[in-house]
Structures are given as structure tokens and as C-alpha cells.
Image 1 (cartoon, rainbow, N blue to C red):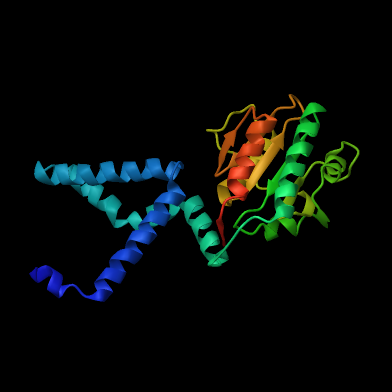
Image 2: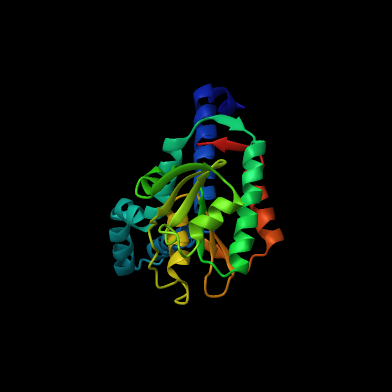
Length: 254
């Protein structure tokens, strides 16, 4: 009871804010390599306690030297996650909205175009902007600002088109740009059989929260990159379900 009497309202606010911050951080690193790194840091902390208990001075000194540089180590290890978190924070608008009917229609157009491109084995890279702005990538592409339609996407990615090699960036129900060049991930952990489009999709989604739909011109297979991970062998139903779950639920515009 004495402890409760000493508790101030500022302490409650402090606890709630810290809980929200930790919760958001855990959501950001969930399913990423950062989660495994956090486990590694936990192991180091446990090793530090063990070395102190058993008086293992050399081991303790090495671990202590590492902890002295922990801030720099965290920045280096968690660079992609930190960059993504800061980008999302900078874009945050605390307004909730529902996906419009036009956007729902554009999702269907994207699905139909993807299936048609896959059936003809025409390579494509379709990027859908979510909360993080893709302005930097749009600026180096060819501006369009056109309504999303199956026919437009088919014409952009046709082999005779001058902008078929780059990515199409879609925002809402508009194709904002085409022929956009994206960062290509070169990690050795990725499958060496992945083509340039797949690596570009992975590279972009590792830095932003965008969704990248990739059609392979070799196999006609459909893949989706999100949060730096690739989901392959998608069919029409699965693709539509994933996009519906992502874009038709109540969301926070950031």
C-alpha cells in the first residue's frame, strides 16, 4: 500500500509510454534477423553474469569490453530496422481510415494484370506503397500519375516498352511512376537463383514497408516480397487474399 501511495501519475504515464515503445520495437524486429541478434545479446548478458559468478576474469573482461561499445554495435547490427523505424515515425499521421472503393478496384486490377503477365511469362515488378513514402524511388523513374488498370500494367511491362525493365510504383489507386530502379539486395544468405527483380523487391521491402509483386519471365511464377522476405509460388486466390488482408483492413496512415 505504501508503494501505491508513492506512485505518481507521471510514473504511470512513463510506464505506459515505455510499454508502447517496447511493443512497437518488438513489432518492427519480429521475424527479422534483429530478433536473432537480440537473442545473441541475451546470451552475452547471461554469459557476463556467469563469468562474474564463477570469477572468470578474462571472459568477464572481454564481455565487459563489448558492452562498453554496445551503442555502436546496436547501430551497426540493427541498421536496417532503425532506418525503417525512423522512416515510419517520420511519416506518421495519427488518422485512421478505410481503403476506398477505388483502391479496392485497383487491387483487383493488379491481381488480374499479374496473372495475365504470369501466363505470358512477361517479367514484372509491381511495388505498392503502404505507409513509408517511396518518393526517392519515384523521382528517378518516369512519372505517370495514371489510374491503375490491367491494360496499363500490361502495356508498361510489354517487352517492347522502353520502361519495362524497371519497377512500377503504385500509391492508392494511381500508378505514380514506372521504370523505377530499386536497391538490390546482395546478401549471400539469399538464394543465388534469384533474379534481379526478386533481389530488387527484397532490397526495397527490407528498407521500407512496401509490398513488391514479382513475376518471373523465366518460369512465369508469381512471388511477393514483404519485410525483406520472399513468398513464392502464389496463385490468383492467394495473391488476392494477401493484398486484401493488407489493404482493406482499418489502418493507420503514417
